[in-house]
Length: 240
Image 1: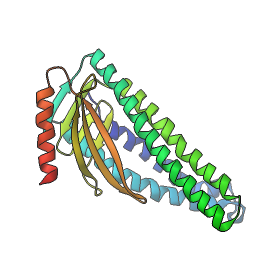
Image 2: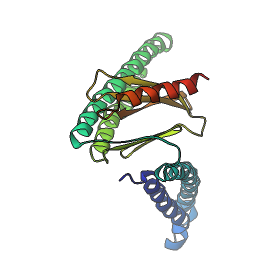
Image 3: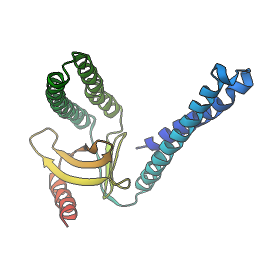
């Protein structure tokens, strides 16, 4: 049975809020003077409390939405899988996610190198080279880790999927395109994989433009026709 993973995240952030809140008062409790780091520690802890509260509000909204789905609200499809079907899907999702992250990294690398060459020619300072290298290393970390984290999470998930008009739950993965100016962009069906994959492409605003995410849903045996109807349903809503 699928559990509310977002609720667990909220509880973790509540715990962090308490820790940072206590951090505000630690300097006075241990006798640390303000000019010896007490003011800095209290200020940093206070800032982190405000930051964590914002995160809690976001995840609490997600947790409430997930609760509604788990209670059966707005469900379009509820699919379950054999262990073999699920593991085949996990492998396909891992390969697709690696390919997506690799292509994105190569694009960032090409842009960074081009910008770096232009800056070297204009500024004529080689210090730009280690800066560009540092950027590429930072970008490479999520490109390498995200697919593996997703793989492990799906590998240990319930072999179950819930599809609604505003979100999909794929095992322990929760994809929501409601609120915070997120929107569903495209729904497609890939039948050349085993199992067939229903893809929900959605985006959300970030400081650097809209970030695109893909929720991949395996199609169980005998559900291909239903998957096609789901694609038509969503794409009609998107185009209307």
